[in-house]
Image (cartoon, rainbow over all chains, first blue to last red; front, side):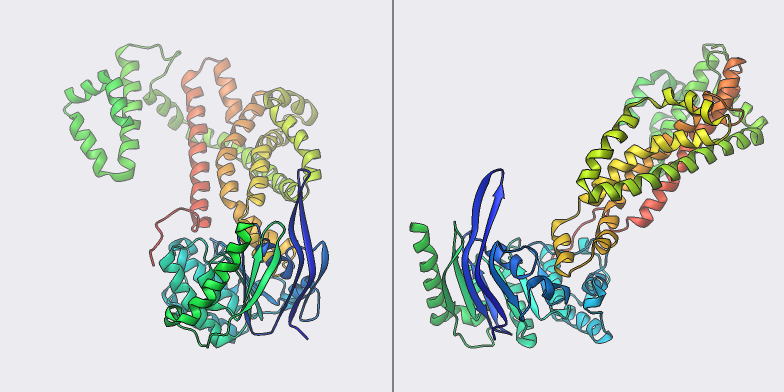
Amino acid sequence: MTYISVNQVSKKFRRRGQVTEALRDIAIHLEEGTFVSLIGPSGCGKSTLLRIIGGLETADEGEVLVEGVAPLEAQSHKRFGFVPQAPALFPWRTILENMRLPFEVNRKGGRQTPEQTEEAKELLHSVGLGDFLNAYPKELSGGMQQRVGIVRAFASGAPILLMDEPFSALDEITRERIRYQLMEIWDSHKKTVVFVTHSIREAVFLSDKVVVMSSRPGRVTEIVDIELPRPRRHELEETEEYLRYVHHIKGLLRERWEH
Amino acid sequence: MTTQQNAIDNAAASSRIRETGIGWHKALGAARRLGGYGYPALAFVLLFGGWELAVRLFRINPLTLPAPSGILNALFSDFSFYLDHAGVTLYEAIVGFVIGSALALIGGVLMAHSPALERMLLPIAVLANVTPIVAIAPLLIIWFGFGSFPKMLIAAIITFFPMLVNSITGFRSIDQNNYEYLRSLHASKAEIFFKLRLPNSLPYLFSASKTCITLSVIGAVVAEWSGADKGLGNLVMVFSNYMQIEKMFAAIAMLAAMGIVLTAVIRIVEQRALYWHSSTQTREG
């Protein structure tokens, strides 16, 4: 049985009488413990698809099953660790208190154990934020804040991480560094990740599978299996194999442009 | 610099300060050394000193404008009397402020969650807000008598609207990413309210409180004018009828002092509660 299955999902948005077809007949199947990226031009519905999987939005047609149940039910069992575009840190909470947040709401879905508190601290240390456990978000730079957001998802106990362009607001240098850190954390946790991005290099570097999408309507162009060895470190980005994948996906996206 | 500007406007006063041996530059220098309090203190000294001098030099009739020294004399020759009446007004204003704020918060919660309710209730609140409160005061005195209750009611009505509007804004203007994050955890509406909406509204509520606490004092005073046997508003009215201008000013000075203390209290609580809000520098990294 596939871990997350998206079957013939369609979604339309109606705004002021105008109908936009965000997604048409999307079908993807994701295995447990894999890293999957959704890539495409803006307006291809990749974020919408992520939000449907996470139960933040509903599909007009088709069906999504997460661990065999509907997204909303999976959500109620706290199966998702969500990382939105901007780091969703509450300004009145310290970094550690923000890490505790996922355990404070919907307690039926799970509470924080002492081990998890320790794990949260260790993860923060591992990304260089060990000195900021009791700092407030405003004392951290944008890159540091987003690192907290990512680490929080890993420490939240959720097996499925949904990341919606988490690096889009960061500068190139910070972005690269966090990408490598994300890879290191993922190597040791092996959670299922659905990662929305518009960076081809990022998608190829991180993923087992890249879902290439086109826009208006949002459809799947091709699903590319990335068979690069793991663990992946930054040297990989210099190899020919890696660049071949990048060129292939670039080609797929350009093809769609030229239509 | 406004202090300097004041000084230039107040050339007469400053030249007299120079005559008495306190050089203008020395005064400014002293103000600078006193840090954050120096300039305001200097401005107050200039204002009240200028007032005192003007009254003495131009021999202004104390029935028109008494000198600050005369007012202070009137105030402190019978301080406990003024304090008693201040207590009455303060009590009315604070109880009114608390009731008005509590009702506004309840209304804010309801309206922030239900647009239909907001559309129904907000126009009524607006109507209550645009109606001059002075016009309702005599009516409330007729209905509820000369006691404290109608004063509290007016203070409450005057507090209600700014608090309501600010609480709705505060509850609604939450960060969308934070909201979605809580939703992704299947947080309940109550959890979203207490974890996100309420803390988010605090800066708005404090900002409204600073306005409303002074408004509630005004409300209590206005209500006292319409009929009361106690309170500073009542004193102002009585003394003006008897042309006891110094005593009237003493009551007004008490009102001003009350406003300062109340605003300061809210400011202190605000600084404690909003430790996270003031914008300080972010660290690079």
